[in-house]
Length: 246
Image (cartoon, helix red, strand yellow):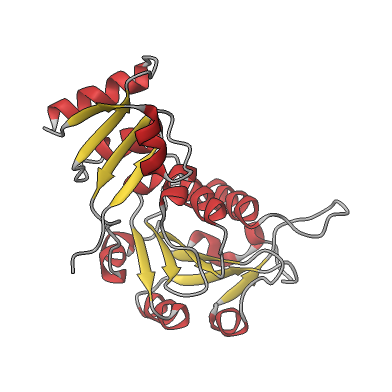
């Protein structure tokens, strides 16, 4: 049986899907939708790519979106195109390589936000385990605001084994850990090819993943609150990496 397709909702995600040249089977637009520059671009991109556009009642969009905030626009597309680890290793094996791996991030909004930041800083790919971590859903794509149309995502069976494969390819793994003795920006590996490993909020990195990381690093914390939301921590860390590496 063929895998079901997916629904991508919201103006930025639909626009970026079309900008990236990914296959879109159909675009649906609410008949009562007010015009905008972004909507005009969506319609122009769809026309240029031969993607059918249908005007439907907003109630029909609501039904198809199943609770997703769609902004009057939906794209019907094939299942999300995960890639293999080899697919991200080839372009990432240089002295500027930067990947992001997630360990136990179950909140789809956190996953989408991390993907959005990872794409913004030029990461070569995002690695998510197939278990105990959120996968790409319409909610995740909406939270990512179109970033997942451009950022390769690898779904792996075993994150520890995958970090080992990255190590064999010369990519160091840096695990975010609030109890680490070294701040991220001060660690010598931050300028090397690396994968930033982000754990779940509260629980942090799992034991096996923590043990597999080449180094554990922390963010500077000078206030009284002892931790950050997982997506905020990942965002701060990624921009710190970008700052140091530039």
